[in-house]
Length: 175
Image 1 (cartoon, rainbow, N blue to C red):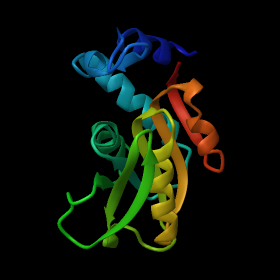
Image 2 (cartoon, helix red, strand yellow):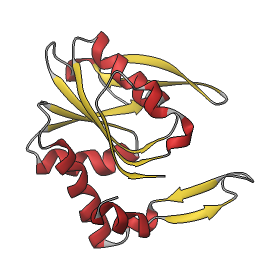
Image 3 (tube, helix red, strand yellow):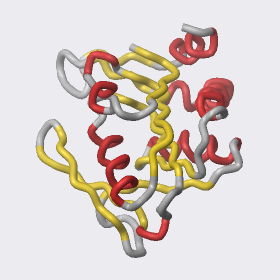
């Protein structure tokens, strides 16, 4: 682990038995409130994307907004929000995906994806990979291409990387 990842990991609080007994929750609010932690995390994500050929950052609601927007700004790229169903005002394209208990829907404005555009997906966490895969499939079905995915944190034991194996996946902090 490099020095930046180690420093960021030190700023992420661990909360045992949340949201239920037996779960160790990685809480990024302690990193976000630290000016250096916030800056270092966004810079690390931007650095992971510097050599990637892409046009637009896409970030899922809501923590993908926190990291994706400033990374897009640093890299002089546009930003497209991927939101929960019913939150975007114009015409959307939608994708349903499975959760541990039930299903969810993610949407992107239809005019946000142009054929041939290359996207970098940025989010705070790679766990099971379901949300990221749904967004990637939505982009591809709309004529775009997923150039890379960058996550601040990867929980390796939950299989998300395997679900996303056809994509270039990068993570800054790994557990």
